[in-house]
Length: 271
Ligand SMILES: [Zn+2]
Image 1 (cartoon, rainbow, N blue to C red):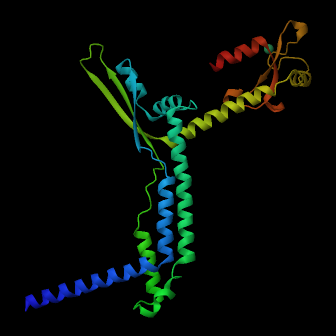
Image 2: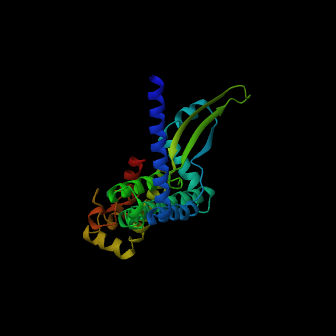
Image 3: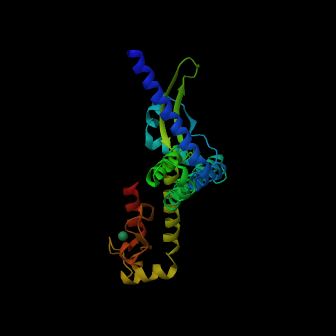
């Protein structure tokens, strides 16, 4: 009795498997959608650039204390920024490939979606006369088969394993610690820093002789802190109240007249 059940189950399984193979075959052969998805996969396989997903960078220290100081994400990210920001460096090339992959993956996903929504079920007419599937079943099987076809692999994020290392002068002992930092975080910071540099240059360029004169005239040609004028022997300068290096702008309300002594006193305080 048990044997009979076993054989029956096996037969049902074999039947279902055969049916599935036949149906899948019929979809593969006639489905416009399936053919287009395979084509799309082939196209993107050549577009996606080959990059490693993990790189290792060593950051050598000269003392154990230095290793402790450097063992944090902030310091390591800044170190990697310095290493990678040179245009034309091999890092830059890797970053560009990664960004290209991101862009292509977005395009792939959108093209894939369009194919599914415009073509799913379209080829049912070709098989409906000799198929046991309803149009809906055909459509579902078609989409499932396309989804199962793995898209080509695209590396869209590169991890940098940064390792701080200290080896004692005699080479007897070695200490190290490592952290993982994502390349997009490093390049986001590089971009932010270069934009800030651009902005500093621009704000300084706004400080023309005519601008300085206007501010001094507004302030009555007197130091805003001690009140002295050129007649009292003061050398007048125009000061950014919030320093340009800290994001201050060259706007009238951020500018004031100071004598050299007061200005230097202020700078000394800040340092
Ligand atoms: Zn003064």
